[in-house]
Length: 73
Image (cartoon, rainbow, N blue to C red; front, top):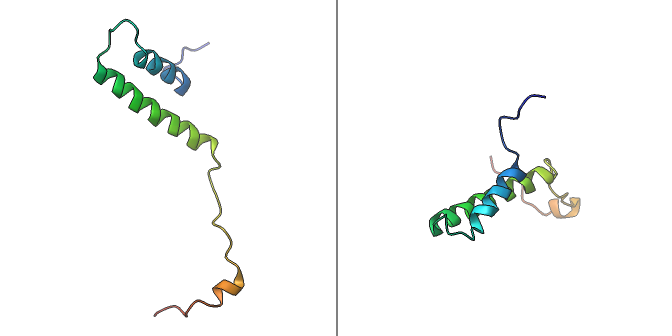
């Protein structure tokens, strides 16, 4: 089996969680903050993947559209 080149999002988030929860004091507060920001970004990417890609706009009833003025030319 070929060795993977890249980490999955879950693996990255696990590593960032270790940095953020650093009990040994290896990482600075700035490193922990950066880990938190990056983890949030990765969580948003996961949420976008899970959400339906194409959402149709809501249908506007014809009686409401009838009240609109004609388009400007």
